[in-house]
Structures are given as structure tokens and as C-alpha cells.
Length: 279
Image (tube, rainbow, N blue to C red):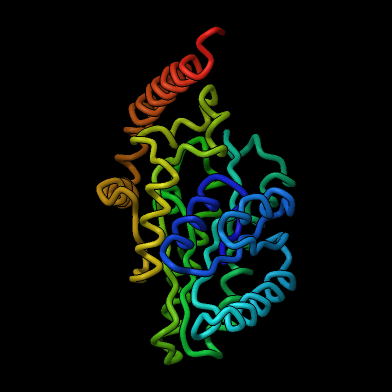
């Protein structure tokens, strides 16, 4: 079960899981788009607003029943919380409605999905919730403050919930966090001229297919927190451990991010020219 699967990373994760042998239910707010995405992967899709707790619970029950009917041993084996939105700019420029929407989708939506899945998985005795976070969940990201705050909340919720599961004796129910660097998906396609998004371009942009393959491996072997690439996770954790140093280096880091935006703009411009040489 994958949320936010109509396109971008969610669609790539669904395809990677399908290739790995999983029967995959694709969900998204856009029912028509997710149906198109699901067509080559078995055609199993549903409209889902992750902010709706009852809807998440209903989809979890349906996924478990349908998985059993399709012959998947054990019912609901994996739930991937991928749905998310990005807003940029200083926190004081975000109005209350924007802040609420980001937190409701990125944090509360993933909590709804996690708890809906765990209600099924705890009863059946096994299962895995994989929460797609971001490197922004491991370090404060200037220009993406509200987004990063929502992702920090998801990391804390995921690790705390995993600890609670172990304390309650659930050894075969897992919660993992996947924290990738910037990914070249529609979330960033229109951010090449946005100085608030510079933090997402400080590393090497990843392809959704690469991150999806890592998600499929994590589905097979759960771990509490995995960063992609690993060295970037170590780097941002170092900055998080030394906030004073990170603040002093912020101008240099963001300058590197703006240079990354310019490189990607040149690259995408060259790609567009190759596709349309007459223009």
C-alpha cells in the first residue's frame, strides 16, 4: 500500500515494489491519476486523502482483505506513507492555513496511515510501515522551515512508535524512516528559481527510481532510519549536532544550493532542447 502514488516518487516506489513481487495498492488524492499509474501494476488503486483518519483505516482493512484474497500470505505486509507537500520561504511568510496543511499532510497524514496500518499489523502479528521522510527530517533546513518541522515530527513519531511496539512485545511489526536527499520529481520541477528551495539542491539530485530501489530494499530489511545517500545523512546529522556551526555555515551552504539550482536549470534546458531541437 503506497500513498501519494499517482506520480513522482510514490509511483516509482509502487513500481519497484511490484517488480519485487508485491501486490501493490496505489492511493492518491487524485483518483483518476492514480488509476492511470496503477494500470500497468495490476490496476489496484483507490482515492485517499491521508488527512482523513477514518478513510485511512478503511483502506487498511480493505488492503488486508484484498491481499488475503489475492493470495498474499499474512494480509497487509507493507504500508508506505509517501504523500507529502513542500512549501518554501521564511516561516513568518507562511499563513496559518499553509502551515496547517503542511503539518496535516506530512505529519498527521503519515500518523493516520501508520496507525491505520498498525491496527491491522498488530492483530495479524507482523507487518512493516515505511515512512518516506527527507533529510529535512534530520536537520533544520533554512527556507524549508515549516516543511522540515513536519518531517522532524514524523521521525520522532516513527522512532517512538517503534519503541512502543517493542515494549509492548510486538517483535515482528516494524516502522522504518527513509530519508532521501533532494529528488528530481514534480515537487522540485518548479523550484529552480526559488531561493527558498536552495537547501534541496545542496547535494546531488537523486532520481526517483534510485530512491525507489532503496525503498524496496528497506521493505525487505527494516531499519529505523536510512538516509540516501548514506554520507549525506552523516553530514546533516553532524550539522544537527552542532547548530551554532550550522548557522554560521548557512550562507555558504545555501550558496552551494543556489549553484545546484543553476546547474539543474542548465541541465533541464539542454534536455528540453534535445527533445525539441527546432525550438
